[in-house]
Image 1 (cartoon, helix red, strand yellow):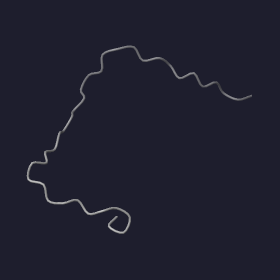
Image 2 (spheres, one colour):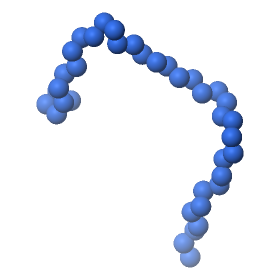
Image 3 (cartoon, rainbow, N blue to C red):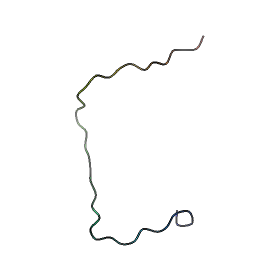
Image 4 (cartoon, rainbow, N blue to C red):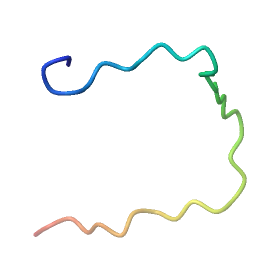
Length: 37
């Protein structure tokens, strides 16, 4: 990782946002993929 990207600096203001999705409201359409014959 360090060879490819710059190491992040220490940032005391950095926060972690954790999202826990328990319910999804909306319409879920079936995939449009069709099996190949």
